[in-house]
Image 1 (cartoon, rainbow, N blue to C red):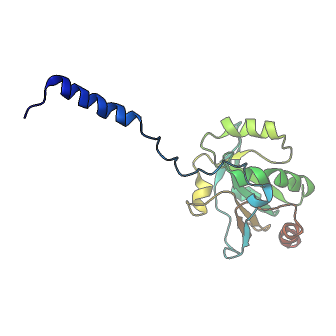
Image 2 (spheres, rainbow, N blue to C red):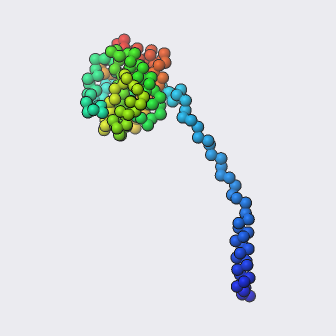
Image 3 (cartoon, one colour):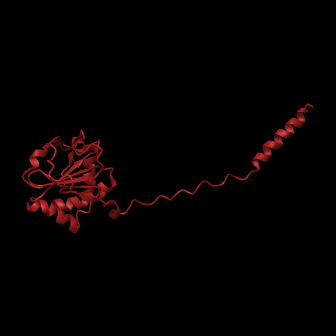
Length: 194
């Protein structure tokens, strides 16, 4: 039996109103509250790796923001600590002041060579150094990521490699490292003695 138009409208209205009377949906699963960045100590979890000891320093050309170049071969003759980093890398940023202090303390004995892997190069590195006030670290850039590729391409940052005066690898650290620690100073002294 066909329904009359007023009865049909009344039923439609009743359905519409009954839908509005529903309780709101249960709350979504609680989301974790964002926390502050991990403490500096939590960022410095790198470990020494000696499995590449004796490997020659890769032959690459680095540039600074002004266009000056550095051939890696020119680092031979003095121990060198080569650090690959980026401005967007949290552990890199945490360890940079420690590297700056290390470079100042061991000036003339150890070359601390910081190499940015930032795609924007000097555009981001120069203001970063200015903001942080680093006085002992160079602003070398790896524009084609040649150094990163020489270390295996998919290298995570930071990566720091210690070379002896002959340009042979002593050890490397993948991840942030406490360069002010007694352990770090003892490990660096290996290259300074040889």
